[in-house]
Amino acid sequence: MTEREASGNLPEQMRWTTQSKEGGSLTVIYHPDDEIADTLGHMGAVRTHLILGTPSDLFKRPTPETAQEVFKHWKDEPWKNHVEIHIGGSPTLEEYTDRLLTAVIAKVGQRLKENHPEVHVDTSILDKNTIAYKIFKTALAYPWVRAKLHRANHYSPGMESGMIFHPKLAVAMHEVGHAQYFDKEPDKALLYHLPGFRSYQEWKASAEAMKRLLPNQERREAMKILEPAWGSYVGRDLQSVMKPFMPEAAKLIPTLTIIAGHMVSPTPVSTKLLRPTPGAYRIRYFP
Image 1 (cartoon, rainbow, N blue to C red):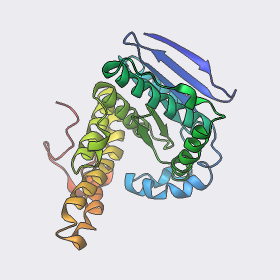
Image 2: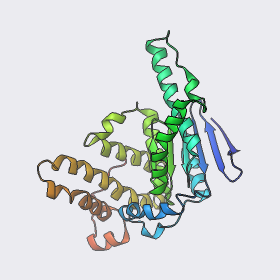
Image 3: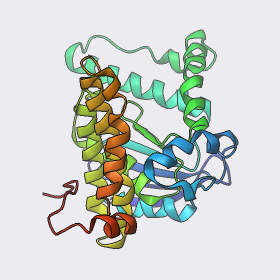
Image 4: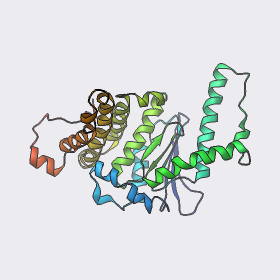
């Protein structure tokens, strides 16, 4: 396992990268500013802060220390994929497009090599002067901008890349937890839309994150965010199942599960009101 700090394409970027003996790598890139995410994005992130119970973090952004902590927690994993995590901002649209096309061509090439070795992939699509490249870039502009407008924390297994805008360490750890899950498991993106499977993947991402957080304070702080976040996914899954039969009641389910997540998380308020006894409900992150 080798580790190094390297400068990014821009002098103000901070980048940490490590390569594993399994052939993969982890790169964490910190962006000190993002024109869209740091302006309109803060307003678009209000809903996320309300769900996670972090309204005090509205208009805040992650720090370089957050990026360093993320790298420190995950740098020694046996990565097989080449994971890239952007914290505080995003790659440029051109970098975003290049990464997706490179990932798609690599996966298609691997499949062809296994099943049809006589067929080769034409990599000319990566040429920025081709019409195909420009079409892809235009099509990707919408999800790229939308993520910044809502400061949407997410990980894309197809691109092996994630973006984190929230200042809390737990959110970044959760998104890298997705990367770790897909590093171990084949991409089941199609199953992600089935009721229950999305909640399962979200739970696995939080489980991977919790295992690597320090006991006591780090884990307690993380549970305050991860439990209501998981509740939102459970609620959406339950809503999709109930909607055909009880459409009006189904509308309330996500709100109720988010509230339940806050109630069972170890917050001072919930502890005072509920006085939970040993063995009270908790998401089981550990065996």
